Length: 150
Length: 150
DNA sequence: GCCATTAGACAGAATAACTGCCTATATCGG
DNA sequence: CCGATATAGGCAGTTATTCTGTCTAATGGC
Image (cartoon, rainbow over all chains, first blue to last red; front, side):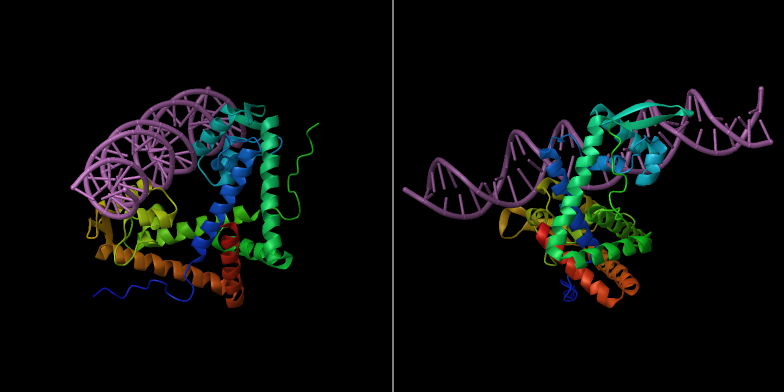
């Protein structure tokens, strides 16, 4: 009995979710490894939730949390972490006495630039493997998928 | 000075890594939400590292850890967690006195089947959105990317 | 001025994975 | 058979990431 499990269900094997996870995991490992070699050894993947979303003129914690899709407590934790590491500075918001304004330091700006460059380079290398046409098609398809899954 | 940050670098916007992450996150949330509604409320996403890799005849902890790409301690933690929840049973390995054999219980088999079905259904719905041709192309492209990123 | 809303802080917990060290067993060369 | 080495897993402790719940303080409309 119970010998009718489907080990590889069709000729297919892996679901999209797992493929996306694998690809993301490898890209993340690669980019943060290169960032480490570029002198940003204290940056961790979670920090990108802030670094990806911060405004050049500075942002408030709630706005960063909103953009990153996480709670303000979690974003406050990341803010504190990056402030201790010297990537961001925290000051009062001139327009709202309750709020703080998170701004990138020079090191923070360098980190954002480096991460953006490494991400672009990774994409460029994959574009060479896939070909420009396929790469554009993949981008289009992925944006479509993310929109549908909203 | 330092006013030359590239806010949206090209007309492009998002890198592949982030798109993969977003898509994976939404799929995972969806599938585990449906699993919860299907009576598997105590399953957490991390458990899939074991459930995806366990052999129908049972597996050892080291093999599961190897396949999932994590340490044996982490896999032992998941094994213990799933054993307490009644999804797997742990017995001695008949061929190796050092080893234990992790086998799925009936509930564990039901969970594996359900998760596999939900994953297939999610893929099927996305295939409707994208069209069969585009879906197959996406699968091919993703496998190619994962292979290149090894 | 009062009060509902908002920004953030503080405390605690849950989840997920790690490193380091230890024991028991297995296996292989002599 | 024995000792060296490798392997399976256990135990203790730590780090990282994010959550809930509760609190204070400031804002802003009326």
